Length: 465
Image (cartoon, rainbow, N blue to C red; front, side):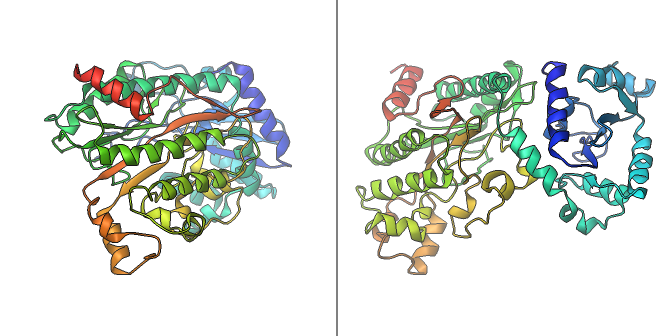
């Protein structure tokens, strides 16, 4: 956690931006995997952490804008709890560490909320992303469960997004640490992978690298030779010598900040001619995207730049044809690049998306419904202090190719006969984490090879060739 003054200042800035009322924050509960007491690893709500820094289950808090006070609600551990958890600081002690002097038992929160409601005061709350939150808000605020999400406070959502998305220097220090550890995870994968191993052997090593570095996973590991499946969490294949491995993983460190990187590398140490041709196209789109990062530029435009470079580059391989601008406008590139170029990152690996992707990434403006572009999570103009991922990809998805061909879709732009020879290709992606600066952008964390030459050098060294 940061200094007490950081949290006091965050709450004060939030209160100043909201006219009046009660700001309600829900911490998370322990959640059972297959029965009540066999819990998933606990993850606190990131907004609760941002303002109150208490990583304990079953807490809630309010900020009373009109009275200028904050209160944290929760029940102290009993001896029965301590037997299982060990002793922990009291809620009052933890609250004092973040500048909160008022604490109360959990049951008092309902009384305080109902008193405020009886006086006609506004209760501001965030959209729930867990059923437990929906049910609490339903019971506490007398809102039909099906309407709870719609009653979330738009002023609170927008104010928190504006505050949290601009990272301070102290936050960037933590993000550099998280991305450094993420880089170590990728180097472990690139150094350990060999033909004949099981994917889960390397995935396990990647996981242990995060744990040995004092962190944990920021999301489930993607480690696969079937990179054409975008979120492939299956690790049961035998690694084949002529395949490409796509590894997408990230570390979350104790402060709560996360990293998220992807690398694609050849199992046998060098890219085949076919693989190299497409990887050079991917790398060109990646480097052009990085060069375009600066304040005031809409990330949607950088996404379309990457898409244009990918479509244009694939002409050399004979996979595409026709006017590039027209093809990208119609979404033809999404056959190969069906996801967005990136997303914001912070304490959530997709930062604050529980507040609504449309609000976080698009300033509440309508998104495209076009295949591919609709999956772009960040499209708005960039500002100094925003942290984001840059992750173009090229994928040859047999099912998608077959469907489009059966529909005679975009035949003026796609060479389907040529594509038949690429249906066993797989997929590739490269991803780094960057912060927008006053005049451009800075890479977070250590540099891990991204160019074809550097990836091959890293792999050949690991294989002793």
